[in-house]
Image 1: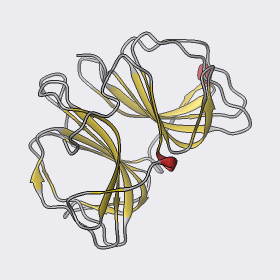
Image 2: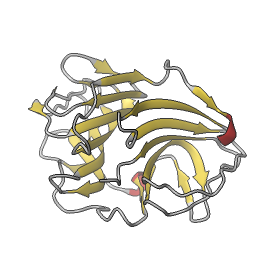
Image 3: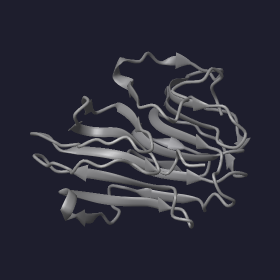
Length: 227
């Protein structure tokens, strides 16, 4: 985990963060900046969700990860010392793996550290979402790309792209859901979620999302709020 003070740490509350309105904060690593969206410091259910920005040539020291780390490259190219990952790449790194991030020309990434909920945190995964196989999701008026599903079926992640002028029936999230909007706009009875907005819906809170003239492409995680 990278933060200190709790941020959006109550899993029973709706949380919304507009990263466009948040300033970049310095980290202890030269040329690396962050925007912390969520931080829970707990040995069993700890997690952090942040955006990280690497200036041209910036790097972080190599480390052996204690938590599982999910990354989505928003801009530029991220390197881990062995491979380069361009825009729209998803990388899952299990605990115990070595991680040495850097960027030759600069990049912005979405990063999610998570103490594993169940034994076994899944294998290393790399997906180029630009070339991966998307599936039609006709009853929601969308396409979806599944990123992972845990063996026990609790934690899942996907990228959904909801078409314009679509309404999704009111529903709640029995295992919780968090979403980062990649492009477009999603609305519900509470507010509008535009590109760069991260929001978390707790277990049991209903909403009825819809799109208008724009589509909405979203990075979605479910099950993170179940322990």
